Length: 310
Image 1 (cartoon, rainbow, N blue to C red):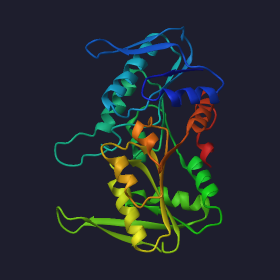
Image 2: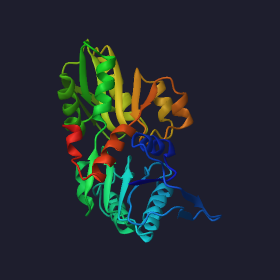
Image 3: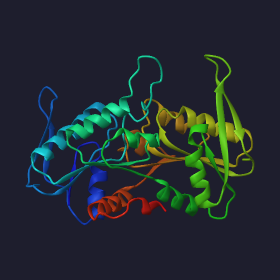
């Protein structure tokens, strides 16, 4: 078993390799002067079980191209099996036709990764579970829930807690968290009364005099989470924290979160933290290296991955 890291999140790849008591494969992932991607694997990988760690986060197209070229390099170097470890799967939000003449880019990216040489996929908290079916190769979708639940239990031991889904689409995820910590569940129903108007928030469930914990898979601009936090405070919540797996946090997201009623935003390190995130007083990251490392070990040893989350 050998691990190769591309450039999107070197720190996470190094942490994963440490949990497995191994080192990263010597490789050069660079750009030519015209910004073409070039990958050179600088040691023998013939017959090896290879794992390529690369999140397709910002800059999404550059990081995706690095992953594709790295997969092709390993395939041509006669690796026995190649697993693409994609902690954050970019383009996942384009998982259906949102209107006439629009693409399903999540499927397109799945095809590209498969054609480039991946034999299996290891990812985390896909935006929609059915994206696993976009791949024609084995795909393991890991969950950040174990590390988040541990953090929640340590912070809110014996305090009144309610798990909140920020929209109807995230109810299944929120219910799973609520079941793990034996807490009640609330749902935020959001809709617009008319085009261009602000969203109207309706809270389904009792959150007054409780610490509310919003759970979601992706936070981008932060608008939904910040509006949800304000709506919860308005109906009597003691405090509001958010646990979100993938901190995309583009544009003015960090500023929006800093100026919101959120006590804290907790994300994983599936996406490398920007300087603004590191400097923020109410955003912190939890490492998913132990979960991904254990999943890699189990894949290599042909053991069950799903039992990690039972």
